[in-house]
Length: 82
Image (tube, rainbow, N blue to C red):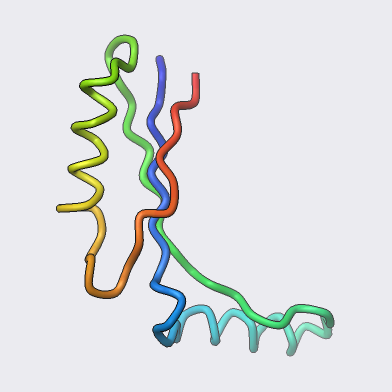
């Protein structure tokens, strides 16, 4: 069954406390070379049949209106995985 994957990330200009915590933990583990981490959300929407242009448009609207908070997040990608 096809799956539509929606990825949502915090806006670049906003502070990402989770990302900062993960970056600090990576540094504590002794891993160098990591300058920043950004933590986001991934939604996998499994479809019953083929992904049509209409369904993809509906998921795009859903992502913008419901899956993300437009004030602090951006929908960075919507892709179909077969």
